[in-house]
Amino acid sequence: MKRAIVIVVAAVAVIGAVFTVKSCKLIKPGQAGIVYTYKDGVQDQTLSPGLNFVGPMKKVKEFSTSNEILVMSKDKREGSKKNESFKVATSDDASIAVSFQMSYRYKPDTLVETYKKFKGMDGEDIVESRVKPVLKSKISEVTTNYSMMDIYSGNRSKLNNELTKYLNEEFSKKYGIEVFDASIIDVHPDDKLKDAIDNRVTALQEKQQAEAEQQKIKVQKETEKMQAETDAQIQITKANAEAESNKIISSSITDELIRMKEAEARNKFGWVTVQGADAVVKDQGN
Image (cartoon, rainbow, N blue to C red; front, side, top):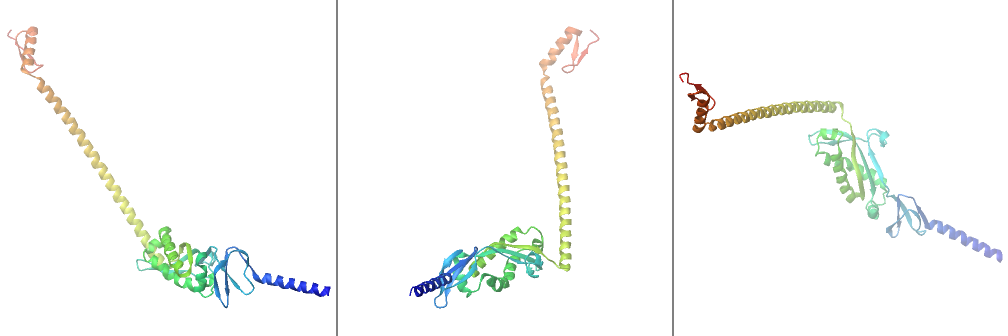
C-alpha cells in the first residue's frame, strides 16, 4: 500500500512537471511572443522576453522586435546573399542602379495587428514577400525628384533623409514597420551611363571654372573702378582746397590793406606805388 502511494505521488509529480514545462515558454531577448489557439485565435497581449506561463493548450509564435538591417547590394559581402542592386528613376529621365540599406523594427504596440493582417507570417517572411517587391517602386517615387547627378554624387544626405521619412510613413501603416534609416549607399552606373556622367562632371567643372574667372575679372574691374573714383575724389578735394585757399587770399586784399602798404613803403623808400598787397615799386624820381 505504501509503495503504491509513492508510485502515485511520483506519477503526479512527473505529470505536474511535464504540465509545467509545456505551460511555460521562454522568449528570447529582442523577441515578443504571440499567443494563439486554434479555437480562439490570437490573443491581444504579447509575451515579453523571459520565462512566461501560457498554459499547455496555447501556441506561441516568436516575432522579432529588435532592430534589423535590410541590405540590397551589388556586392554580397555587404550583406546581400546575391546581387540585389536595382535601378531607380531620376528627374532627368535616366535610371541608375543603386545599392540600398534600411534599418527597421516591427512596432511592438501593433505587433498583434501585424501578425493577424499577414496571417501568421513572421517578420522575415513579411520583408521578403511583401516589403522587397514594393521597395524599388517606393524608392523611385522619391528619386524622381532628384537628378542623376544628385544621386551619383557622394552627398546624398537630403535624399536619404527624404527616403527615411517617406518609407517610415508608408511601411508603418502597411506593415507595422518603423524605419530608422533608409539610405542609398552606392551607385553602379554602366559604362555608357558612366561616360555620360563623366562628361557632365567635366562640363560642370569647366562651367564653374569659367564662372570663377568671370567673377575674378568682375572683382578686378570693380576694384579698378573704385581706385579710379578714389583718385578722382582726391584730386577734386585737392582742387577744392586750393580754390578755397585762393579765395581766402583774394578776399583778404582790401583797399585799406593797399593804402597801408603804400604808407609803409613811403616811410621806407619814399614815394612808391603799391601793385598788390606785397608788390612795391619805387619812384626813381623822388
